[in-house]
Length: 347
Image (cartoon, rainbow, N blue to C red; front, side):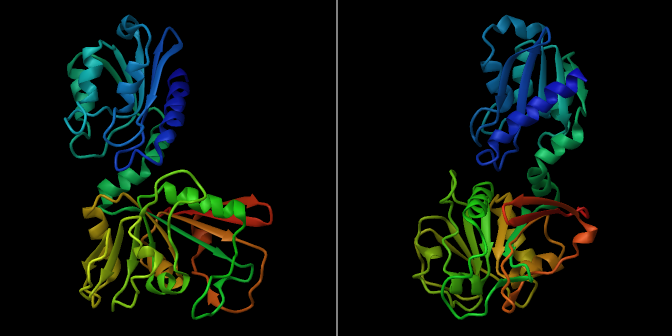
């Protein structure tokens, strides 16, 4: 029970890295001596010190390390990347006992850190709150095991199942409240990339940036098979990196990358391959209905957020269809709006 208590604190700390740690995993570390926490840390952002390093640095009396336990939500690394191996640092500091939440699925680690610590004569316990620790790094695991980004689908729909009216241009129907719009921007800040289809890009002219929350804007992605999207769109303003999947050569634009794509074949596997090659670990798909439905039909998703509001549109663009009865569904209330959170139990 003591080990679980401190591991829960590791998980709590790790979540602070949600917006900045990627493509590295979120990791938390706690150092305990004589039933008292003497050090804590988490991985703040990619390229900077890992959780174990920050926890060790926070200890005021380093002599206590030689009779302490370090708790880590993820197996300490054993290879040289942007930072030295954390397993080596733990050994160097003489920490005798290491409690690990779960093994690291990354090929350069995956048990090597555990092996190194045990070969150094340290007591190593693995698997404390393992399911919770794996859930914490589900994006990292999906990326490295399935070779694709972790995919979140999101849309807002009316009480009668429409996401918009039928229109040729202009702003979409406002189905979100100020609070739920803020949550959408929070979700954007938590993802590496965001995607919309050609029609949504053309009719809505979205910026797809983070404005109502603190954080960096994700890489913007859209489809433009025949080069119909004009350069005046917000997507092409150069403020954020934008990827365009197209079969047409296009004149270069600042901060825009055109990816030549074979539209005679299934598009989604090609998109997944390109995003994986660019180390984009998580993808938020915001619309439109046809693009969202293509991900659902292909079983190519991990989470879904559906905002359901009381307004009725009576006609228009139908919301994507999915069988929620087979999924794990959680419902949250935000005033008159409800948000359905669905996880894909098939994965």
